[in-house]
Image 1 (tube, one colour):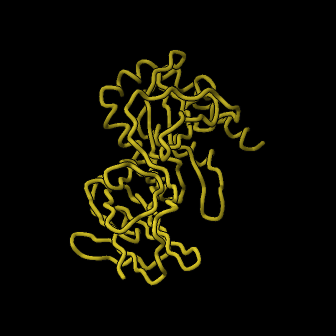
Image 2 (image 1 turned 90 degrees about the horizontal axis):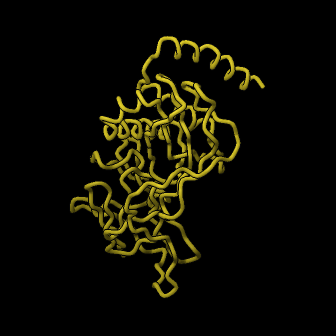
Image 3 (image 1 turned 135 degrees about the vertical axis):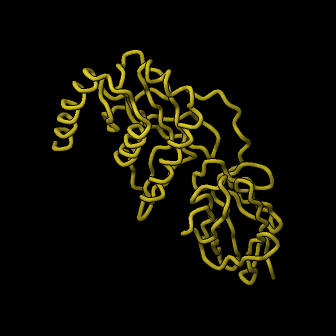
Length: 275
């Protein structure tokens, strides 16, 4: 009830000013609204795992759209980076890479915009973005919260989807014993994988930091598990922007075999089983 009252007061103050002064939408306002929508739509999956939407459709007034569309590529890249930073800071998990789409809304006035968050599974490469809610009320500025009413799916982007592989255990693949020692070959040197989970990314806090601008802060992880005497090593993408590739194919989650070539951005790693 208090949250609803707060939103109503915020709209009552901001909408008249936006209509009277015709203030243009600024990218920092869009980034702030995206962060709010991520927080509002966060879904707890379990301890330390919270899922958030990864596709944001930004509806702008025609005047704002024409002004921002001239540098839409650079703007969307910056907004995606802001979303990734917020997800990393809050330890959110996204179902796929972050996407931002700028569209024109005929019923909006200058300075008014809507943020429509949606979820899209980027690991399977199938299905459209499923919106969390309908568009926010008309003339609602900086409001990332939307009424919890299922809305229509967002339009599919006309782009060629990368080939993906889903993890499917191979029944004829020879089992590895516990004595085998998994490692990654990085620039000619072997890095042992001793932990159950090794996070690879550009962030300094990653277990295996990678200095590559094409690599996300938390790009992918390698997870090691034991099924009785057998060892299983799985590579999993963490919703990276540029995707994770195994032997040239984009993957979401895939079991590793010795000699597999992993590509993150412009960085190449080779998985090895020693012993």
